[in-house]
Image 1 (cartoon, one colour):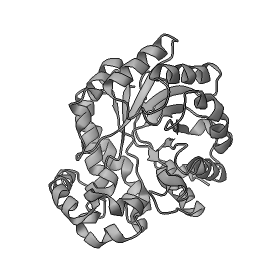
Image 2 (image 1 turned 45 degrees about the vertical axis):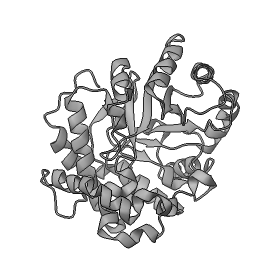
Image 3 (image 1 turned 90 degrees about the vertical axis):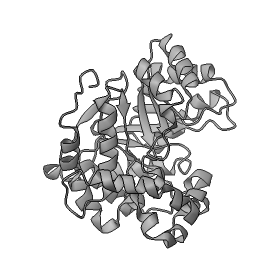
Image 4 (image 1 turned 90 degrees about the horizontal axis):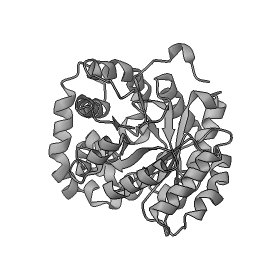
Length: 339
């Protein structure tokens, strides 16, 4: 059970123009895929007990939303998440859940046909945000958005989001939904110190213009910016799934990313935190502080994976210090118009 007496509070932001008040740190649930399916095999399997512990620590330290997807084990992640929440005694109104429809080799009609499976996998927990996972369906963006709007009107989902959409695709999706008086509230994209393309390709600018929140996935470049792969170059061959075949995780790739890792450490030093505090969260918060100070409608999900970025023995200690560091990082940031 979640120990509510130990629960801390971290700031919340409104996601897009919705009424969803989400914690500025969210938990990504890709790693709960049970090593199932092509996408799910990216991560080693995580036991049910470990899943519950990760979610319990997250909840007790102020995280109130979770991001999963159909393709994360073809429902395995959704089932793991809802099962853990249920065993922890968490009521559906106490959390916000985002999941995604997988569009590859599918027509828009699949959105309506498969929503029952998504709801069944979540076993009674609401779909607060339903996202198009990739912009590669066999149907047009227009058709997809109309199907998503139908789900909103049928009260099967609360809000619509997209993922990996270009600025042009995002604007079109926004316009189609607007005609039906439904907002597009988010675009989930790859964003980190090693991948800042959205700053120059129009995505961030367009999102700010339209009031769409950016949810950043892989903000630590799947662990590279945590520094652990640079510290132990042999770790790339140890139980890290498909990542061991990705060039960025090999010695030549790690050599290229070393300056970014050093920047993380340098910026993290600006925070007065216990010496055992992992630098990962510090740099993300520093980044979030930068974006918020420019009054952008930005939301970083953080996608914290305890398995990926934090030594297991330090997980609980790390989480308990989240609030202290976060509040220090944004204490002078104006949030008018963002909440």
